[in-house]
Length: 281
Image (cartoon, rainbow, N blue to C red; front, side, top):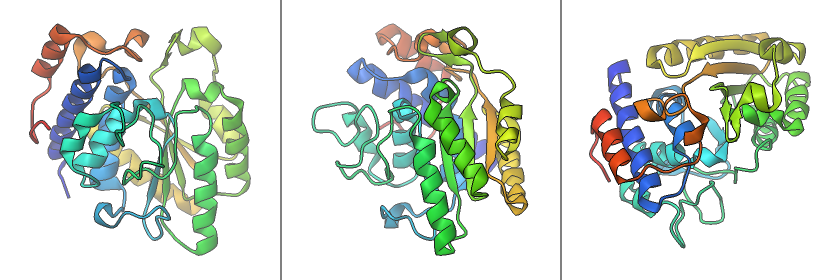
């Protein structure tokens, strides 16, 4: 099992992959991908019980993951490749014609690691709740993990899923909300604010934790707590405080990097800040 420092090194390589993929096709979403790189690295390299070599769509007897905010596909593809689901060299096909690595994850290309097409915001949590209920009915003790955006919570379907999961006592559902307070058009508070997020989830019968999503040790410690909370019979949400563009100083904290690719000079600046630890594709 990788140490905290080794996970940090993997996350650095994942960030290199992200900026290189988006730059190569001048298309994609670097900001949120960089912000969630630490969390997805921790999930796939330590927290989750999963089987890259024996991937099946059913995912029986292993943990599952749903990337509800599917536009941050660069980080998802990088982590899948780096953890062994497919050849790292395939990252070079990101967003190209006939590639399995489309701008949003899809299933009809048969890319290992992807179980649900996502990107239509607001739908991932509903699907994940169904997955979690199926596991309970099957007697499968494994967990369904979800990553979703904070702006995504403006979609009403999420609150139906939140209500449903609380009612069904889906304690095998652990959701991380990427709480960077930025969305494509600006600050979440200015676009459509939702305050008292902790209280809202608790009112729907969820347990709520908070963590620094760009601090690897805090991610690991908080997920230990989340697993322990399963005994209380409630779904768990982690309000994951991140910085959009984390790891690249000129991208950090601004909604402007939600979906803008770096140019040649900006790519060079970004890569200079991100150590190559596993070898570029």
